[in-house]
Amino acid sequence: MKCAPHPRTSGWVSTPTSRKLISDEGSYDLCMAESSSQVSAEQDTRTRVDHLREVLTRLHLIRMAKMVDRSIRRLSFSGVKLLRSLARMPLVGPLFDPLLARIDKHDRLHFDEEELLRVCNALTEEGVPYWVAGGWGLDALAGCQTRRHRDLDLVVYPFNECLARVATVLTRLGYERQTPLGGTVWFPDAEVYIDDRGHDVQVLNINWDILTTVDELLGTASSGDAEIKDGRARVDQLMLARFTAIGALQGVVIPALSLVAQRLFHLGYPQRPEDPHAEDISHLISMGPDKWINPLDRAGAPSPSLQTRQPSTLLLVPIFTFPPDLWRLCRLYHNDLMVPPHVTLAIPFKPLELVNDDVVQRLATLFDEIPQFDFEMDKVRWFNSDVVYLEPSNAEAFRSITKRIQLEFPDFRPYGGAFDEVIPHVTLSEHGSFADRRIIGRLAPRYTPIASRASHVWLMSNVRGIDEWAVVKVFHLGNSPISTPVEPIPPVA
Image 1 (cartoon, rainbow, N blue to C red):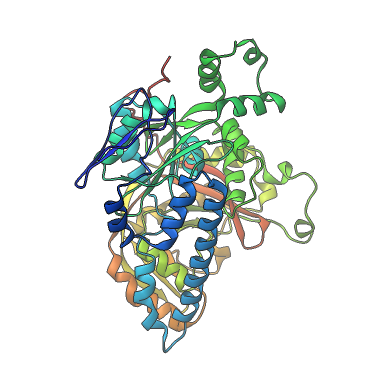
Image 2: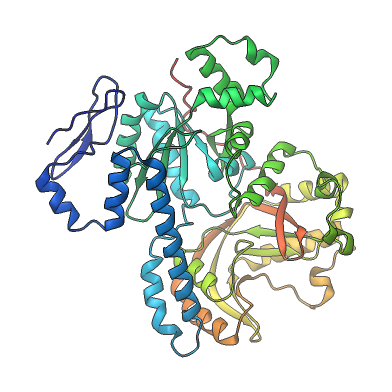
């Protein structure tokens, strides 16, 4: 079965047993017209929502297709929220847990770092010019993962020339191409690939003309940029100089969009729940690893809440290796994970107003002298009946870090001196009812042991709200070398 390609894009050849990309005058597209027999067969297994979305996309009614998609997603979220509320009920709650497990089979916020490195390594080895964008792009510039992510955004350039190779790489990794919903003003083309584990990769084409124009109108472009002539050379030079950068995750070099580009992309969009966190990470990146700007100085006029309270700080080692089902259980049983799973090193550390350049430099030196180390969370423990937690296998390593912080800062007392002994732990639940904690304590051993690595320490502050903690500084443990098996590929000239 052969399909006619779009005049500006390329053809897609589909057979009953396999699909492969073909080159057709440098164009690329998904064949939207299927034979009548195959359409009827696919409609038997396709949901009505998927079919409606595909029809609207085929007719280029992108806005309506996206509206349908958002509406269905809101209804789904509302239904899941209702099920979660019912699952907390003491008697009937356990009946809903299997249903929730099936609904949450593919966690929407679990594109893990290991998968990102696998995709990036494969693209680099294939010689595809790409840059990581979105939340993972910010994390690459920050040098470590700072939150969970629902997908991986990849920008490729030149877009049409690269798509066949991108599709080959992602297909080899187990991804399948989905029906694209179209793009936005910034990203006119957006290809979607999903694997059977729920990982979502979006391959984006940037509207470089709009990006460079907005950059110039806002006055952020340097004077040298104006001297670049129109045309392909202009795009190439601006892209390299202004809109791309080099980040790193787990010691591996990651090509990423620059902070300038990331900030421009957020203009004109309604604020999302993760945007305040993105703003915090953007400030970290712009501040640089060797500088410190106190958030109290950056905020300008103090908010009314800051006039009545003194923001505090804490130090912790973040953990992002929880299995998706354990994340789900934590959310379900009264642990909203506003701060990711972690081992606390110092709480409260210091009032935020007392954290100055000297304090930050002493912390950086202290943590740089401590090598990174691996650990496992393999045992479920309790603090009386109040807190259920996972015990890290290398507890003494965490305890020794806390002791070193005490030696460096004698006025610091762990937990304000409330306990005689510091017990390193990863909290699973400490809110809600005892029945909630008992359920998660019973189910958590299914997912142990959980391997992780202590590689970074976060300095966090509740400057925005008494229970709203934000990352204000990231420290690296040890001197881990940056490795880049293959040099990042420059754009095609």
